[in-house]
Image (cartoon, rainbow over all chains, first blue to last red; front, top):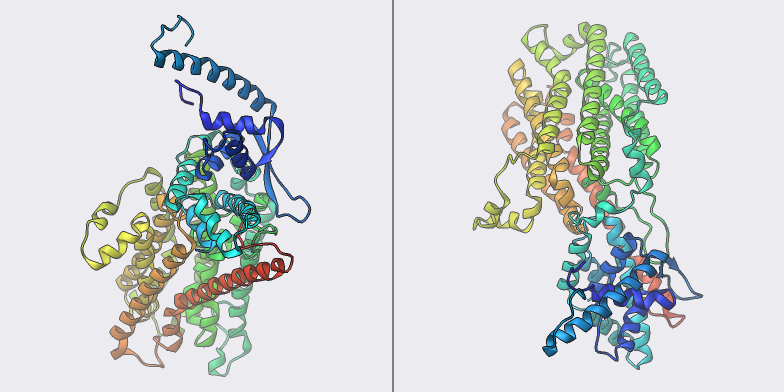
Length: 113
Length: 499
């Protein structure tokens, strides 16, 4: 993991799965819709990341078939994944604030980073 | 571009075939969902299909992303929980000599001993061609039987492809055979099977020269494939075992498996040679027109060859494990302007395998003829030593780092390896035939059967070709069937994805 900033793709993927399980395509669409098209998750980033997070135990993937649709691999957040998401979310918020402060030229309070 | 080709290219660089299949299947589902959305946006079916691929992004970038993530060097792989069969491998089940396998080997030896004692094995019964009994032909069939049994048993080692809604159920034999990559479905049976292969291969290899003496023409053709099959399976088993152990442990276990296998092979082979020599030597040698002189001793070198082979195999295993570079760096091929060099450039990652395959092909084409023409101890010894080195070269190529690289090869390139071997073999056959033309007589040792033996490998290559073609046709047929079936329901499926 990036020591300076939490991984944005990881954060987004975990967030996308926070409410409901979803397959890769739905995750891409969710990020696209939530960011009003500003953030785009490419498949070459998404699927290796999904499999990596699955190997780390942050989510589980299962092939499911809904009705007449073709089977898709549905990812579900695990408890460890939720815990990790909360941690990442706090880190992101804290550091994003610091970055904003640094860019605006204000003084950063000690111990925040 | 077809979805099938697209997904094949994107996952080409993923070293693990099962992971590649999983990614293909997942991306295929992704493409399907994307296409459905595009169809709802008003695009035609063809446009939606192409647009879906376009939106997936650059094929090269995707390939690089997946290669980086799923490559063997990725550390995350080391953290993944072991699959059950690999866990079993780590528990040394593969090294266990069970009572069943031991009984099989011992029973086989006893049976062969008994047959040898009756004069069946070494041709003491007059040959059929000389008006003798059918017994001279039967041993050929007896040899084919264990070969077939071993082949059927080996099927238990190959992955049983799960039928799913996305792809073909065909098992690509060439993949599992060439790359040595076998997923052990029932690894508990792999230990006994491996030992069975070793025992069968050792016995039959020891018998081979005696069989040459005892048969002629068609029988000779029959026993030869049966004789070649067990050693092939032996190498198959050893390589697979090594691969399983090596991928997960990267330590001495791989070498231990190889060493135990080769030593067991040598032991059983030596026993067979001893038995056959004691029982059948007196009647066999005159049949060949050989006296108990240097020529006769040379004949026995044929039987000793497997011992040389196992020794070489063992050395090559050690060499492969410690990774000594025996051939020039692949970079030298890449810089070459020489046409073969440029050819190798395309396969620079797999140069070792190709080189080994070529040498083996040449030798297998030459050796039956050269053996037939050699009537001195030195001649026989040189032939067999050369052959042992050639086969060991192939083993080395397969079992060293090349084996990891081969797994990343696209299927069509894996198949190309067979053409390399086949090409080398044809060169060897032609060279041997031309060289031996003056001494060729149908009545002598260099008979029609001997020449046909040279073409054994092309025959195998032909089988692989047919297998590959039928496999490809089956996949296409299945894809068409998918299209046809689902076009009736308004669904769009552009390609089936082999799992």
